[in-house]
Length: 158
Image (cartoon, rainbow, N blue to C red; front, side, top):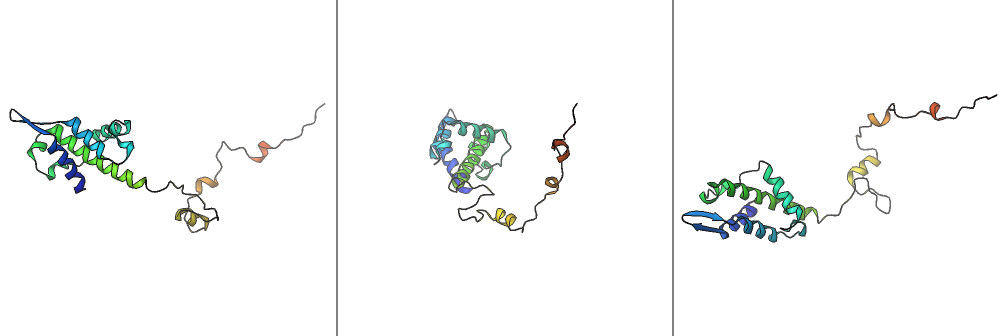
């Protein structure tokens, strides 16, 4: 977590300027530099995924990472503080995505070619070692047609 905060803080320091005693941050430059630092193309700065995540994280109440630095430049400006916190959270999400993308997608009930279960959960189920809740599976709902309704019954005509 510290490395993400430090990285975002360094972006804010690089993109800071002072005009008539007022500190101004170039927010677009900060966002684009963060996006270009991400190793996953899905999080590139112009992608809809990046913009969507930025908006979704911005709409949530996130941890106040800016308070750690006690920097009046960031903590006194509510827009800068919010953006700082959102970008730290976005960097964490990107890191989680990069690590998760390294693993193949496996369904919970997949088998290997030799017939063994791929996941431990499915292996426990197939060896009858799991407590599986099957109450709803064993009951018939009113929408199920029973044998009497489905069977053809001959009728005498004429």
